[in-house]
Length: 372
Image (cartoon, rainbow, N blue to C red):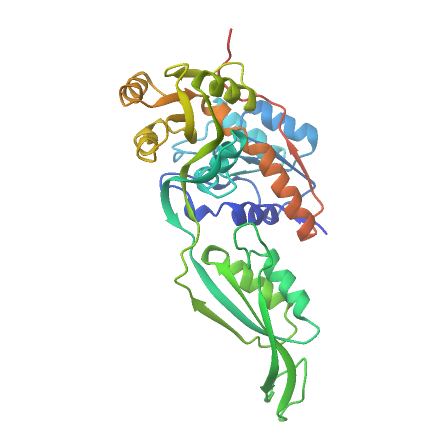
């Protein structure tokens, strides 16, 4: 089965819909053809010329980056400037670039979820909720013998996910009745004759941002010429999404011990920190990237320590004055943890979707800072 770029886009947006990105952000397709066929996908935090040359060398026709290549509206695209040369190289080498930015930050299973897990936090909640996932109930009537095909198709498109469970659905048997009229080509029955068929009522839930994809998958797989299905609005509160996470440690440790554990867990040569070395760390807030502005939310959540990146001088002073320990793991260091997790997610999804594509991580270190 040939794999198109848009197939991978759909898998990314199943995890991190672009609809939950910040309004100022620019996630999604950056450069290239969504219909291009690919064999290899490469994941990176940032896009630069070395990363794109690496993609060419690895035969990766699609690059998925966390930070968008095109972030602000372009006023010009000059081929004598570094940004223009980069885009020119991408286009000439038939490479497609796609970004999952703040949508991947806030999504369950995204940057902040992975960061919290990496640092050993348990019973985590969203630090600054931006909203809750909304659901509808889908009910479709399927002739016996075709239920499994339709169920697999709609589940693969994003229906039936509840927490860490997939393919959730309920079915009941009954009798479907219909009479094909002139001009129809019925899968079962004859024109002008009332037909009774053993059918199954299959019901499941669908996130509203996946509804179009699920309906399309259902219609494509269902054998009937006219598919009978219903959609019901639900008031069930879905899981919250938003920036940051807050959770507890299994056992309290000293601030110095925790800082060393953060450094090791994230594979960093150094971290910046502020706080009493022997103070106890019990509850920790995290926010990947430039999350220092969320320190008041961390304090309100009862955290004694905040892990993020890009903390400036005055933010550091304010946190210490408020009695909040902080660890600055850097923008790159606090976000790059998502790449191996995203690779595993895509590999699992590709296998379950029957997509034969290789997923690889960039070997280029795009962190602009070094340490001596």
